Length: 252
Ligand code: 13P
Image 1 (spheres, helix red, strand yellow):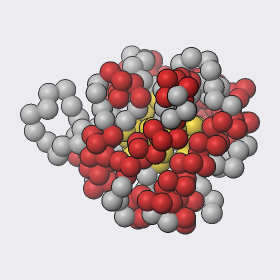
Image 2 (cartoon, helix red, strand yellow):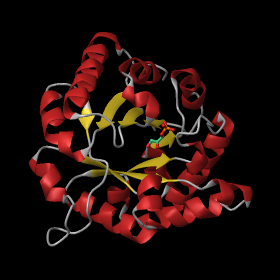
Image 3 (cartoon, protein in one colour):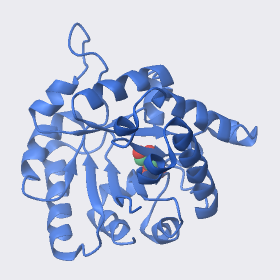
């Protein structure tokens, strides 16, 4: 089964609107002139830039997604953004449960599960972020922690599950310059795929793209992408430089 190869840039809370538009334009220009691989490019700018950057990327193959989405349809949720708000500006992808949101904004596996269900209902592809902390890895509980995070997907049909993307981001590798080795990452991706197969079936699990995130750079992308179960990357810091982002996307 050929899975979609994805290079996704999470801009986090970086870039003013003008800077963000500039970065998106550079990425588009470079991708159109250089990107010969079959990689799908995705960018996840801050909410406030979404409408303008989504418009700017129209007619390109670059997917523009949100970094978060509220699980409720609408209502008194000050500061939040709903699924229908995203689709109303043409945005059809969202990150769900990034470790920074779990850490600083109390997102839980249960709230992530609710966000995923709402997103699917609206035709939005969730990129579900999971991964263990350093303490959990040192305690040798990382496989169990990741499995529990994946249980947020329990009860989805195979058809729904096949619309999800998973991003494995060990918290200890995010923004630290410490990448999991390609073998360490792949070992976890194989585990994730087996949990997905148990939640649905092997065919469905084999079709789901599982991205690795955590200090992905142009110089380590090739070895990560060379592994059997690593289908791409969710990139933080290096996605803020158009050259680095493109070089990673060219490493498939
Ligand atoms: P870095 O690539 O900066 O480590 O960030 C990874 C990440 O959190 C992407 O979502």
